[in-house]
Image (cartoon, rainbow, N blue to C red; front, side):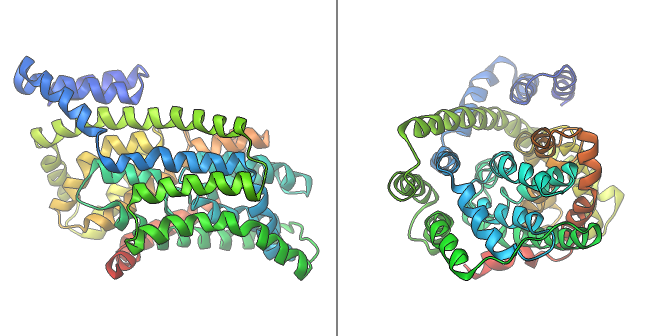
Length: 424
């Protein structure tokens, strides 16, 4: 085990890509277990890590999200949500959050949400008198709902890494936690808008609100197509994702009429690039996961956790704190593929429900996406707002406290994650 730890720490310290770190550390571990004869097994593990039928859904989900972005869906969703919140003080702040909830059913990726919504909402919020750092903070914090409310690329990756939970259960289990996070953000947004006197807009006439709903409706049907087909059992994850991509092309070309062949090509390019990153991470994580299983690290991790406390809730809080710390230096997907093969078997061995812990891990790692120094979504939003990253960090603290409250709630009440899957 020591060669693996040395290689892992050394490569991470010199700034090597996470996929390279996992591949080389797994290679070192395999060589220490059985010498050169293990090299063939490692190659086989890399292939099996990306050969699952479920993974076909990943590029389809990414492609659907990019088609929606290229087709101008964001404007339609913002117009509809603005008609709902326009008369309320701090309207654009609430619209920012509510749009992210709708957008979560389309993108499944936090940074995509940040860019798509932030480029429209942040300049408009600044123009209406909102603080630039606040506009960046609310955009970044609301965007992390994307990988929690299904469909979610992160959940598909998790189901591929740890095959003890179906992706359908993960999708169903993320609905309530995602909505709780949105509710927590809205509570903070309402309070800050009242305290700081943020502007409100004139009431939207009913006919205008109705028209904005009609225009946005074809786009809002996409999550229903995906989730309805999957949760009802009519389609597999892969079939639903493929149909969603075809549907996105149809409404973009026929209904909205602003999706050109050039935009479709651009969406394909982004899809290939992002999918390549995801698949390379999965291939290399399979090597490290194989070594973790063979070496007994998960068993040792379970023993280490029990030395701090025998109380289940405190053990969960300790692991959540560890995940937050890891998330401060790594993005969500790399952090997931590094820690999941170690922590999940350890927590199952301690008696925790695997679905409950899976949802909790995904939520915590996404919260770390707004945690400095990395905080990719917050950093992206700060750049769009043209505000120093440090000021955006300070502005995000009230939302961060709300997220911590949701994490504690999810840890204390497993049914929030497992109730809907149990109904299915």
